[in-house]
Image (cartoon, rainbow, N blue to C red):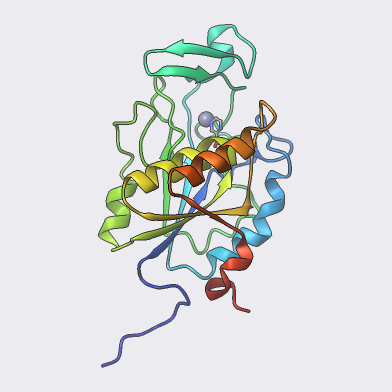
Length: 219
Ligand code: VGL
Ligand code: ZN
């Protein structure tokens, strides 16, 4: 019997959709400029993959990354046990509307939804490891179980969770692509998105445009 081939991607490729949540889109508490504009493109890309993981930043109230917990202003940074922690406005609180996936995201292609940042005392930017760079989220095991060797990453925010996810993907040994035009960044301070793209490229991440995904999107 011939194998059933119903996808344009190979069996070894997965798509990671990072933090496409209301709070990171215009109107949200940590809105990324144009964060919602990438959703139509992401929906087109996702429909071509068999394995699609959506991550959700999913913080308890009073999370250690919230400026309000420390009586500080958003975007200040402080020293914590694991190094520098940027302080953010309260965002993506478990079960609240701000933490929901954006309504324009087509959820039908999703094969897994991963919640991260759930420990009130530890932040988690990367989809693979929490910010102690040790505690696994389980994503690596999920991808390996499905025989994945190549990952494509897009979403929010280029200079925070997309960046740390891509760096860890490389460290885990995945061939790693970031689809630049399917990402948007916080860009505080100004220039952070360019620095992130540079750092990712240095580390072995391939930063590409969605037009290079012809095998997924069609001609
Ligand atoms: C993120 C800041 C704080 C992100 C998450 O998803 O990029 N940024 N928490
Ligand atoms: Zn967060």
